[in-house]
View 1 (cartoon, protein in one colour):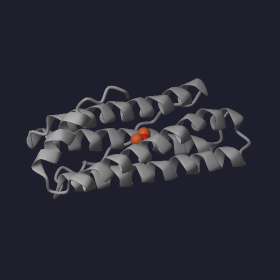
View 2 (cartoon, rainbow, N blue to C red):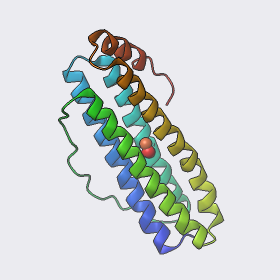
View 3 (cartoon, protein in one colour):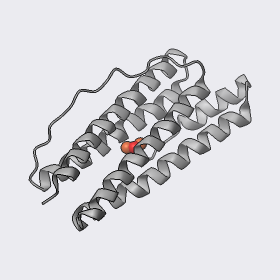
View 4 (cartoon, rainbow, N blue to C red):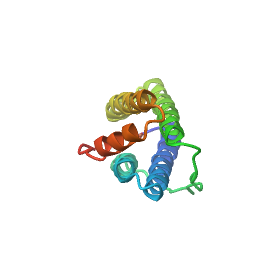
Length: 164
Ligand code: FEO
């Protein structure tokens, strides 16, 4: 059994992960519109991954006998001033999600809720990976600066993303 606090935090997290999925899909649409198909493909994969994250929380709540209550997802941002701004938003969003995961973990520790701690450990590791990936991509965009050729090559490279 999970506490009411954990229940509320996890319901919010289902919403936050779906919100992230929607935001990344909006970023994909932005790239698509600029003929940056590789970057769009990367973002579409990321959007799918965020939906899977939401479903992990959904399934966990079902497993512990709690009803999943869905909340509204706000309109996502649809315009960015540059490609770099999209990646900075991605990094900021992942940092925000990391704080949310840490906050749920803090509550699970306070509750001595070992099952939830075990479940959340996967997300702690995942967030390290997601923040690092966003930082690495930003570093690559910083490297190419305004080079059109660099953008072409990065679009190609990121479009080859295979893993989730
Ligand atoms: Fe589900 Fe990218 O955090």
